[in-house]
Amino acid sequence: MAGNDVTDLVERARKGDPRAVARLISHVEDGSPLLREVMAALTPYAGNAYVVGLTGSPGVGKSTSTSALVTALRAQGKRVGVLAVDPSSPFSGGALLGDRVRMQEHATDRDVYIRSMASRGHLGGLSASTPQAVRVLDAAGCDVVLIETVGVGQSEVEIAATADTSVVLLAPGMGDGIQAAKAGILEIGDVFVVNKADRDGADATARELGHMLALGESRSPGDWRPPIVKTVASAGQGIEEFVEALDKHRGWLEEHGKLTERRQYRASVEIEGIALAALRARIGDLRGDRRLSVLAERVVGRELDPYSAADELVAGVGA
Image (cartoon, rainbow, N blue to C red; front, side, top):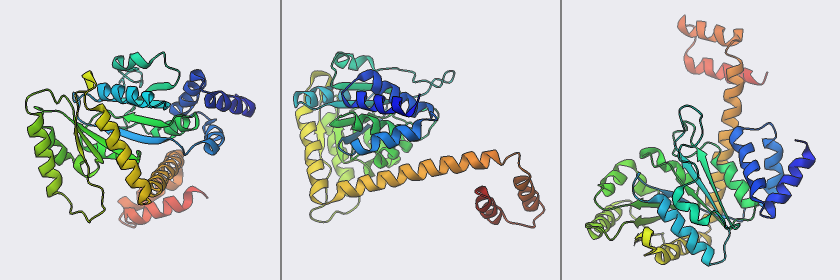
């Protein structure tokens, strides 16, 4: 595909063509040789979407909550993108669950774009290409991008580096409050949602969560205090309050200059990831190179420590 084709693809994506958006995200996921050109073409149009990450243990109702959130956002006239990150198939590397069955009610809406992405062994609960996929949906005119993560526990904290607002979902009767504290998720949640609130123990779960948040890091006046919202996503209950909590957090971020700060941090993490991937590729190319073998021999022979050897290797990568 030539440069003119990339320009055409970006233009079609900006007009809401779902096939063009799908092709651009495929370039991202596949690490296409045209990826740099695609990202350069998208950059002038990105930076407008609000990114919300939804995380929590399997079974808390992330997909149902995401679908209910899409319905509420569409009622406000917003274009919505959804990236649902699934565990990878060990055979194909593709997403196991595909586009979520529970989100099929939005399948015919041209102002909703849903894409399942495979984590492909990436440990953070996200796909390594999630930031670039977010940029595609952002540039394609989505007002809000929802990222629903795999739900793998401790490594879910990566969502905090990817979203403007991080939502942690819990459900009664699953020991989620304690598990969340163990996983360190309490530290990254901006909004907490106790879903399936029609079940016994919902009030107790919300109370326990409130106590844990109160015992956490001390906050100064004016600091954001994460709200706890109770929902029954399958029935649409509490979703209005959920959206209101998201809006309040966005308002607080903008008022305190934290939104720009978060986005700059997100960009720094993305740049670092791309740079490290490029460095790993170059070092991988050196594996059959005599320079790496010589350094390994010197470490084994106790002539050189591994840190000094690594310094020499990195210094020689561009040489």
